[in-house]
Image (cartoon, rainbow, N blue to C red; front, top):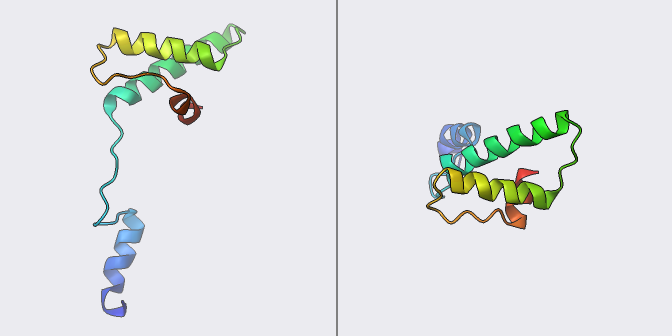
Length: 83
């Protein structure tokens, strides 16, 4: 361990484990999240209450408009991560 201390420190700093494949966020889902967030902020600026199911429906609509090829569902898990 002491011989490889510099390698371990640089991996820690870069938050990178060479043996683990990390899940990469897709640009498509990030685009959906950005669009939903912008819409949410606009609705709240108008003092319109927005609930979770309304956000999910809007996210599905955005996915359709963007030509969803991944089968985006706007599940409760998506909503929790979005929140």
